[in-house]
Structures are given as structure tokens and as C-alpha cells.
Length: 341
Image 1 (cartoon, rainbow, N blue to C red):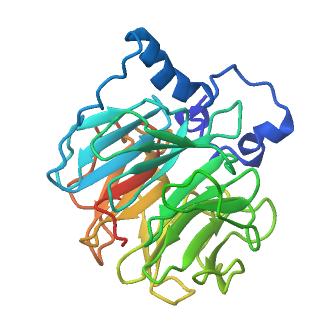
Image 2 (cartoon, one colour; image 1 turned 90 degrees about the horizontal axis):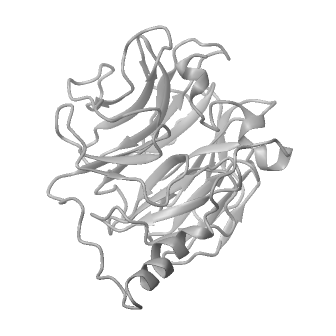
């Protein structure tokens, strides 16, 4: 079995694997998220004679912009200085995670991570800035979550593969406020621009892959992008409204994928980033400085590492400051401080 085939990534292994909960497939036993708050808080309370522990001290200092990488292998999120050259992790987050996929960060630095365990519908884990212990979990309305995004009001938006919808959670709420289904079919990547427009990448079983765009407050797409969208996974929007879409593969083969760039308001690509020996560009995020970060997997026949590549504005070649240490089957990326608000 190749490294590509052995990585469990619901967005990569196909619709059947992504919808295991509805197919009745036999899966290994795994702990449910319902047990997590109890093991983390109630059990700790009992072990310490009924007295609550002091709040967790910061596990890492926030002195520079940070890059968060969710890794399917090892079930961890690794935290790096975004501006360093091949940096070592500042911290690793594992508490409350089970097959993590996409992540996103709000203006207060709270990290949200989607989890795709094989035995149930999944959940979103929350981590305050500088902390490695989960502070809360969102399960209501979650069904095989893929990626998430935060809007300018701090509200959380999540794509759900199994139910083909997007759920919105008002800041601080654990209950869905808005559910979007129109125009969605196997939704994966999600992004929000500063006008409040929502972008969702769709990878349907049949029909054309696309990016559906919803105006602020709309549940119906105002337009759809299909040109250059072949096998989409992650998407991101920069401060100028430029959209970036990762195509994991081209033409349904093992051909190397790419990243397509769309200028604000355009439906045809204006620039393309290709890869040499690096397949499966998955997650993508943009920093406040306009630098682009892309998580890539290597071709299974060569020795290139799993990596996060950095691209400066208007360039098609990565800079020398890639991230490789402790990166393994990277599924998602998040940057702090975020673009919004």
C-alpha cells in the first residue's frame, strides 16, 4: 500500500469513505466526543479531591505570526512561527482531536479544528490562543466536517460532507444559526471575504466540481466558478478579494495538482501554481502580508517530504522557507493573526 493510499483523509479517499456513518461499514472502535469533556474536566475534578485545577498556563508564546498545521497522521496540530525557515514546532496540540482535518482562527486567537473520526459524525474542537487543551466542543449540526472559516463578526462556518451543507454558529454559540444546502454537493473548502461573501468548494459524485459563491446573508449562490476547478479541496481569499483554489489532482488521475488564482469578481483563473514531484495540494491559507501557504503531499514514488510551501505575492515558485519538521499528511492550515476582521 502506498503512502497516498494509507493516509485516511475523507476528502481524498472518496465519497464512500467520507460517508461511512451512513453506509454502515465496519470500523474500528473509537472514543466518542461525548466522553471528552468528562475525561477532561469532571474526572480531573474528582482526582483532585473536588477542587478544580487552575487554568492551563500558555503552552507557547505568541510573539510573531503563527502557522497552524493539522496532521492526519499522529492526530495532532503543530504550531510554528510563520516567518521562520523550516522551523521546529512551538507546540503540538493533541487533546480533543481524532482524525483532524481543517482549522480556522478568530480574531481573539481561538483555534477551531474539524474532526473526522471513523465511528461517528465528528465535532469541532476549540483552543484558546496559546493553549493546547480543548476548551469546548461543537457537535450539534456537525456531520463529517471538512473545513471551517470565521467571518468578520467572529461567527464560525463549517462545511459538512455527509449532509452536504454549511452550518453557521454565532460567536460563542454551540447551536447552528444558519444552514445552507442550496448549491452544495460534497462541500469541502470554505472561505469568507471582507464583504461577508461566502465561498464553498464542491466536489460532487457526478456533475462539475465548482466553487459556489454566496452574497452576504444569502442561502443561494450568486455565481458559480467552474473554469479551472478540477478536483478542489482547500480555498482561501486574501485581503484584495483574490480567491485561491487547490486542485488535489488533475483530470481524475495521479497527475500533479495545482493552485488556481482568481482575481476579485472573476470566474476564470488569472494565475496558476504547479508542482514538480509534489502531489495533492490540500489546504491553503493567506497571511496578512499576502503570503500564501499551501500544504502538499509528495508523490508516493519519491522521497520528497510532506511540507507546507510558502509563496510570496505574484510568484509561482515557493520561497526557501518551507515547513517540513513534524508535518505528516497535512490536512489543514490556519494563520494567526487572521485577515478578518
